[in-house]
Length: 129
View 1 (cartoon, rainbow, N blue to C red):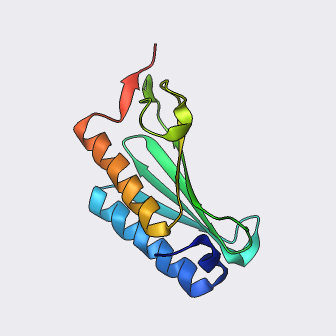
View 2: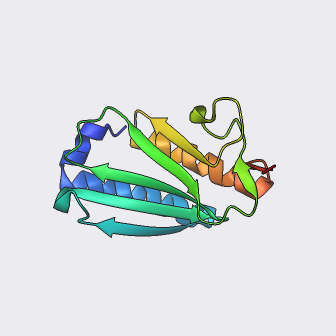
C-alpha cells in the first residue's frame, strides 16, 4: 500500500499516476495530467472526468500530508448535486462539491472507482432544487 510520503520519489509519483490513469480508463473516464504547476517538478496533478464531474488528485512530493485527497466538482452541473452519501464532507445534505480521502493511494483509487460506478448506475447525483 502506497503512503503519501512515497510521493517524494519521482518513480512513485509516476507509478501512482499510472494507477489512477488505468482505473479511469477502465471506468470510461477521461484523465488529463498537469505537470510542473505551481509547486514545480515534484508534482503531478490528475483531472479525472466522467459525466460532467471531475475529481482532482495532487501527487505532490513537497506536501507533508498523511492522506491522499480527491477533490470533486462539476464541470457541467446540469441542475444536479452530489448525493449526501457521495462524500463525507457533504454534511448529510446534497452539495455541489465533495472530497474523498484515504490513507493509501490504492484505497483512494478504489473509492474513486466506486464513485464512477455510482455515476453509471444513477446513484451519484440528485436534482438541484
